Image (cartoon, rainbow, N blue to C red; front, side, top):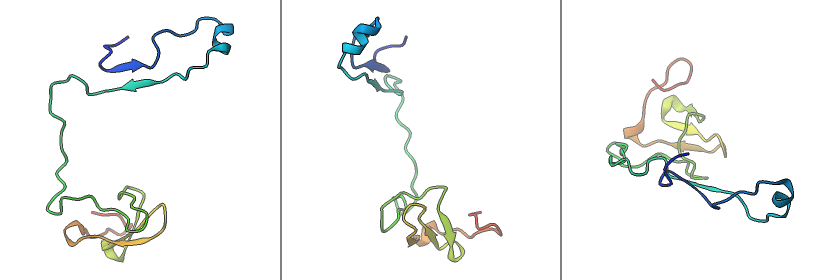
Length: 102
């Protein structure tokens, strides 16, 4: 059990017999607030001078660990749509011998 500010069920009581459960038509869900009432400000990520997250130009997927870097780190191939997207100059980073950012 935990404080209802952190997790709250969509119903207050659950069926306790198999027959009641079979007739019960309500979906069961939970509303979760893992950072509720901590009193601390939510930490913000410094996005750098561009103040934006790099995204695929075609499908708008956020850059992620599964993209493949090409052109020495100046472009990446989206892992969802295979589109090549050029990265902003301030986001550029050279690649090592394995094609990974340094």
